[in-house]
Length: 274
Ligand SMILES: Nc1nc2c(ncn2[C@@H]2O[C@H](COP(=O)(O)OP(=O)(O)O)[C@@H](O)[C@H]2O)c(=O)[nH]1
Ligand SMILES: [Mg+2]
Image (cartoon, rainbow, N blue to C red; front, side, top):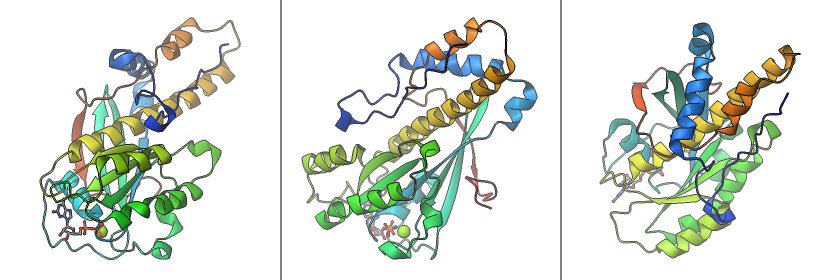
């Protein structure tokens, strides 16, 4: 029985590569998803919980909550008042009959470094490290935030966390240049996006990218579990279809085939939170 070739990993610009996880193009990835879903029973498909957690970190007032509000409600207000404590949203996508939940956590007013509870960081698969393009000091604090996120997610089963460096308020005068921010992004092995919650610039693109990467991650983990179960069961000669399925892995960068099915306010059962 062939072993699962899970050498797939997040390849960030700092490591000198294509941003895609795999190299075979979106068609190949679609085929993998379709083969995977068609191999599942209706019961398995319904019970499949593909879910990942992304957290937004960064200094206070850099624009984190406005960014999230723009993404979730397509709205913006200059005097955004967040509730004190952790804030939590989820976005559910479907793709090839599979449902995927992106859980997004915001610190909601607890940005003083020690005030954020460890519960906030744990289990995150991705981190949006935000800074204000008009306040260079907020960029210099980003590494501290990312280090903290990584420190709380060291379990080997979690894998390396995906980091997105995000320059907020791109509609305003920039005192941080694109080159400066790119330099920090490279140090962090992060992808860099400039966004504006006010105008909406790049907000959808950012979250789509996060969702695509985390969907792949969730799916690969599920497939690995699924294959391990099968490997344990099958005692006869290797199953050729498995090799074909896994040999075809590729990245889906865009969300063309995705559909948002709900912006749920149901806060139960998301990324372990109850
Ligand atoms: N011009 C501009 N101002 C923004 C933008 N996003 C946020 N702000 C301003 O920055 C303030 C702080 O934003 P907020 O999202 O609450 O920051 P947080 O503390 O990081 O969550 C807001 O009240 C807005 O006045 C943006 O995209 N453009
Ligand atoms: Mg906030």
